[in-house]
Length: 231
Image (cartoon, rainbow, N blue to C red; front, side, top):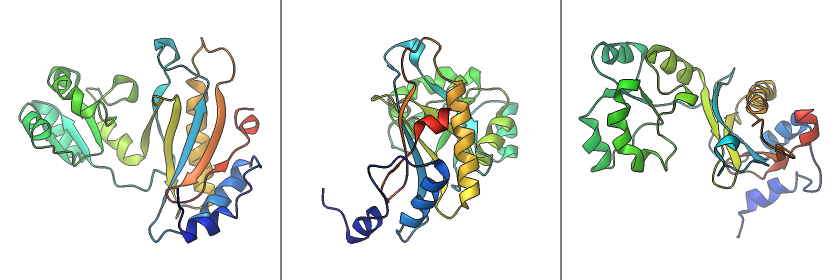
């Protein structure tokens, strides 16, 4: 894969053979981010879990203290009084059954998070094939299937992110933007790691976090010293 001149220059800042402390890694990621836009800072955690086993699934959500730096568009499936509640709380889109053909047939996906009240899950379930692969399906573990739509919307707008294993048992999560201060990124990272460590499956044998990398959207990855993160 051919890399651009900027990436090649930025990559020279990172010693590939080194495992960095979090503070040093964050400083490097900020320094190596040379794109013309405000890049997202992401964490990639390779786990020792086997997501094919239900008891080794890692999934949950956490509110980052400094948010993600991203404006999140929220769609809420609700009915009755909950429609008014969702609109009052600041949901971008609220609806029910009538949204199904719009999403299924017209390919409308102008939203980043889907929240649903439990009594709407029968309707939302019909969108499983569309929303599932995109990671948009509401889930009780992530707090997106709830009667308390106000809390769900407030949490998401405050910087709530979801973490889960992908097919290769890696967790990919944003922890902010390059424009954040090093302290803000470090706080967000620590909050995320505390939640993920707490979510460790009790049945797991061997290492939980095998490797951890922090990177910006267009920048080189910086490997972290896992031993220091999980103590």
